[in-house]
Amino acid sequence: MLRIENVGMRFGGLWALKDVSFEVERGTILGLIGPNGSGKTTMMNVISGVYKPSEGEVQYAGRRIADVPTHDVCHLGIARTFQVVKPFANLTVRENVGVGAMYGRLGAKRSARDAFARTDELLEFVGLARVAGRPASDLTIPDRKRLEVAKALALDPEILLLDEVMAGLNASEVDEALHLLRTVNERGVTLIVVEHLMKAIMSISQRIVVLAEGKKIAEGLPQDVTSSPAVIEAYLGARYVKRQAAERERKAAAPPAEPPA
Amino acid sequence: MVAVPKPRRGAITGKRWVFLVSLGLMAGLLFVPAGHSDYLNLTFRNILMYAAMSYGWNLIGGYTGYISFGNVAFFGIGAYCSAVLSKAGVDNLFADVGLALIVNALFAVAVGLPILRLRGHYFGIATLGVALGLTDLASNLDFLGGSGGASIKQIGEAHFTTYYYAMWAVTLACMIATFFIARSKLGYAFVAIRENEEAAQVLGISPTRYKVTAWAIGAMMGGAAGAVFGAANGFIDPPTAFAVDNNVFPIAMAILGGMGTASGPFIGALLLSGANELLQQHFLKLHALFFGGIIVLMILFLPRGLMYLVGLRGGMRRWLSDLAVFRV
Image 1: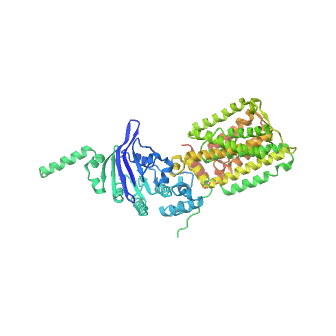
Image 2: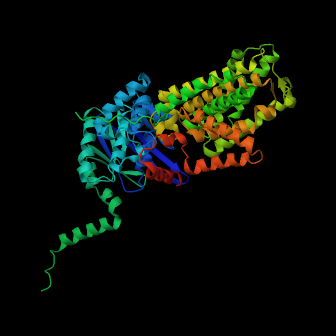
Image 3: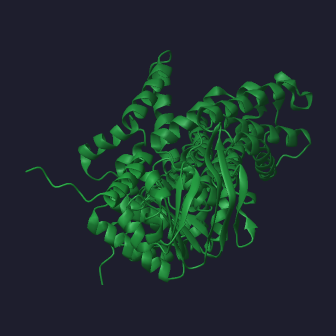
């Protein structure tokens, strides 16, 4: 459904992404992980058409994303959330989501009234109905994350890119968020989830792509990816991997010495 | 079934009752000509004119968040439309306004497409350049009368009254149009761009298309006011058409009343013009100082204008905390 082919993204002399390829199948949940600065958010920006890739291409349903203006990407069925949330601060929560429902994939067919009817359903669904009339600037962090998801859902996406929507949430809020994302996925929306919380992303993703320093270093099922030496190295450093290997060798060579009496 | 609280009204247009009060005041202004005073007619016609220009500025500056310093260009073009028609032998207010609407819409789209790519101060300076450029252009075009100006044939005896009603109608149209635009999908696109252009874009809004739309509708409002003014004034020259006052007052009025509200420009125009009139009578040399002082105080303590106070819940504390937001 979504094909990323040899994508490279250069900022000045720095390649934030280099030669990254992967595919996302319809109806699945793909986790995108990597240490800080590995290019996850850049990848999101490339897929959602905010950046035009310097190399390679992103194809969605047979179309090159780079040819589509940013404001039309959501009309193709691609929606995203921002890691640094961008609410319309002076508008109410309901108006924030309403704008998405008015101008998203199905927006052209909706009057303002219909858009708000759709909005009210969504607010109920993500659990924001209780603050529908409050200005977005009044929201707590978890509610701002919910709002970000609700705005993206209001675009009636086929594929939804979630950039760290669980960062800063406590354990029970993370569980709620995971439940919400699973429900969204069950309704037929394909998800690409960028997340730092390993536990969360391991439990929700069907496949995982790992980026480090702009390159794809691993791809596969969650359990396979976490045991890959390249991934451990990227997260914990080459010395750690070497020490682990040395330790294993030492253990294999000689049984542990008796503690001194 | 959880009771869903009613959404807070007014984030997008200001309070509905304030708008009804404004409509009531407008109705009251219908009776100004009954005073049979040319002074009153002229004073209130100016207030209405500024209100209409302020509505025009409000769409791009207040709703869409692109602070323009050149909206007087549209007013001047409107006034010159009347002059050109008068020269061609057409003395009809509807024709004047109609031509001004068409010319301004076309001009705004042509100019808006390049300069609305700029943001912030750069956009402001570019708009100022447009206004200054037009002043020079008008001074050098002979068929517009050059720097000597052009006269416009007046209609009939009771022309003060006729022109007054014409300006009243233009202002009412601007007011009602603003109210309905703000509540439509179009209005939400404008406000979304003001709040966060990138976020708006990701939600499917083409910034260029909607910025140019806001700019062009605002241009038509200013142009209509200019056309009536030109006809009413009977004479137009570049310094009158593109006067600095006509550029600054509408902005100050929208700020005083409340940017991005459907009543703000009208309330602002009533108060500021009223204050200006009184100050001019009593402190002829100092009135500009007072005027500037009012604007400075407003920006410091009520940057969202008087409409903000009307909608304020939570009293002094909320006001102070909101003020802090603007001081970042």
